[in-house]
Length: 141
Image (cartoon, rainbow, N blue to C red; front, top):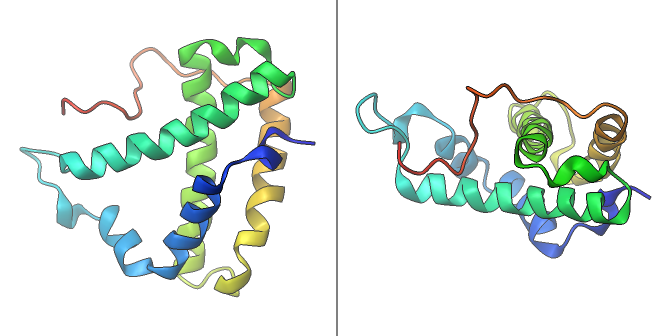
């Protein structure tokens, strides 16, 4: 059983919302909300940090349960795994929104098997995150 099978309701709600309101999801990740001088709006960065916290919780539970390597407690290791998972979720969402995979009503059924396979790979070979790479929360930019 993968660590993802224990995801809480917040993750499932996020899965459904991003596909029910595709215009909002696309706007959140568009350049329309940012500028070269200011970057992303604080509210968007805070929402992204909450998503990252959900993913980190799943990874930490996986480390505690033995489903993932114990060194998942190390912040850089967990950040690398978070980035892989977030990238997969975002990519799947955009593919569904752009009508490259469907039907949209059934996309949620792909999340568990895709992320389960990704977590299985992470358990075998934990990715590295170079020191100069960051992911949210980095709210000061």
